[in-house]
Every structure is written in structure tokens, then in C-alpha cells.
Image (cartoon, rainbow, N blue to C red):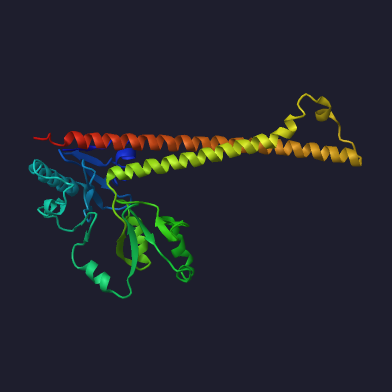
Length: 326
């Protein structure tokens, strides 16, 4: 039923998938309606099970599975549940809750685009706790956000600030700390948030379908490529300007062979020539910057191309799976 995930799937199709603690690859199982991913979490014993329907609706189980073997058994149960109802189930018609309600899986938190259901009453207790602070789970970016007052942040210890910076990046646009990782690898940011007293999850935005996520990834990659190409062009222009003065003396042997004369005019000439040499060498640094940004732009273009191709492949796959009209 399940097989090891290949490099392409780990890097492109399901780039949140992580190897298990023993170093083995994440597992993938295919059904008629969805792919099932079983993924490890680095340095922890937890295992994620993700269900990715071909219709681009994303639904996944998260959390308290402590062994790979148990996860495989649960994944097999999910696959059998999907295959047994494949003729009547449509993941886009709002019936996903009812469809998965038949699975009795204890200790698992289920997530979808509308609700979070926690095992036990811990969530209700946290919401009613007056000392609990909320963190934001952004459904569009699938990252979590921590919002601090400046005074609250300044009051943190150096160790707490280092821990925040290890799991979050400051967003000048959002004026908040945004997790480095995204769903389903949020265990570390949530761990840091909980240590700081952020124990209540508030959801904002609207969850994007997998296809929409790919399109957004491609659009952002193209914007990055355009930006890097602009940086490269500007650096090349600066390099040309820095080297143009010395190049204008090309063929003038006396300019380059004139000895240093210890007189006011001789020292002025020597200083001027050294200044041109230094600018010429700095021009090479600008050309190196241009090459660097061109490489970054090429990588971003490839990312955009791959994302668009994957979105198109997912679309065709979903289209081909639709039953023919009667």
C-alpha cells in the first residue's frame, strides 16, 4: 500500500514531508481519490498523516501518533475508507467532515479549513483562561504569527528572544513574528509559542486549495525573479560605471607607466591613478553581485516553472478523474 517517497515528491509535490528519525524516507500511498502521506518530524517521535485529495482540497490528521507502524495502520484504514466509498464521495461538496467521521482514531487532532477539534477539553480550558494569549494561524500562508507590543518584547530575556528568532522571522509588512516553517511542520514554532504563553490558536484568512498554493508560489517566484534580475542589471551598470574611467585610458601607455614623482602635481596624479585602480577593482565586485543575482533569478524562474507545471498536472489529474457526464 505505502512506498518510499522519491526525491521529486519530497522536494516539489509535498515539500513539507520530512524523513523519520531512523533516516528513512516519508511514505506515500495512492488511492482513487487522494494521496496519503506519512511523514516524520525531525528530533521528535510524532508522525504526521496527510490526506491530499486529487480535487485540490486539503485535509490532514496531525499529532499524537508515536510510531511509524501505527501511522501505517491508520493510513491503511483511511485508504480503505476512501476506496470503499470512492463512487459516492466528493471532497469538494462540503461532505469531508461526515466522510471522515466514520474513522475512530483516538488521540488525533483533525484539521480542515473551518475548524480545529482537539482531543479532550484542553482547547476549551485554554480559551476560557484569562492569562492565555492567542497566536494567529494564517490559513493562506499556513504559518503562525506572534504579535507583541514593543514593551512586552523588550521585557523578554535574551534566551527567550534567541528562541523566538530560531523559529520565527520578523515581518516588517505584517509587524509580527512569522514562523519559519509552515504546516504541517509547525511543531517547533508552536512549542516556542506555548513557552511564551501563546496557548490559544486563532485562525485568520481563507485556506487556499493546493492548486491555489502552487499558483501563489509560482507568482511569488516570478516576482522574485524579476526583482533579482533588476538587482543584477543595476549591479552590472554600477560595475560598468566604475571601470569606464580607467578603460578610457586604454592604449595610453604613459598613463600606466608614469613613475611616482614626489611633487605636488606628481602626487596628485598618483592619487588619481590609484583611485581609478580601486574603482576598477570594486567594479569586479559589482559584476560578481550581478552574476549572483542572475543565478538567484534563474533559480526563481525554475521554481515558478515547476510550480506552474505541477499545478497543471494536478488540474489534469483531477479533470481526468471526474466521471463522464451521463
